Length: 223
Image (cartoon, rainbow, N blue to C red; front, side, top):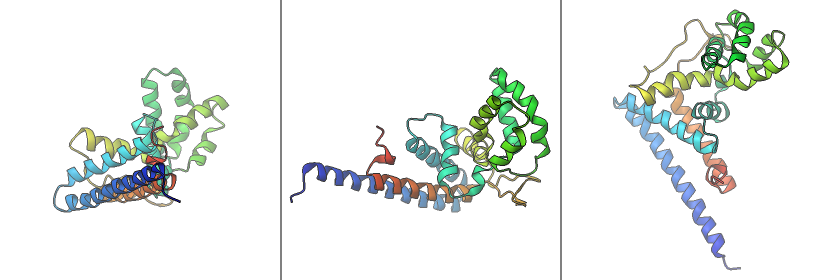
């Protein structure tokens, strides 16, 4: 049977998607060249922006940049550490919610901050935090905590300390470290270009697979 015009258009679309994402692969390789030839700030900025953009595209129409950035690291960066909670980061995140004049978080913070202080010094699994706090708050308060726990993840630290300085300032120093903080009994790895560049490669591969499998841009065609 002859190929219909719709089939031709669909194949052209698939070829365009593939060509676009292959071009992104080329850009990612170029980041290594930038970094290794003394343009480290530029490499970090672009790496952050590429992850940011892919997150916005993949999770459209969600418009929360920080939420999308954290989510894509947790789901597609290929590093288990991103889903783990930093107790102090979580405490600080709740303090920020209080500063937005959200009264319920004032009550929640008073109830849980002593318990979170007791587990500082290590990254905790989400369920570990839930188990730690569940007896201290009401069911309704726990549901609120669960909705905002992403703000305390290691992925959220990457957004705050790597992505934001890269995009809005002259950039972070390479290899942000965590004194006296462990992950599964080992020192927390530093956040730097190498970590994020490897994550970007895995994220791009996941986006490419989803786009080509569904034959839609980022799996949804913005529809």
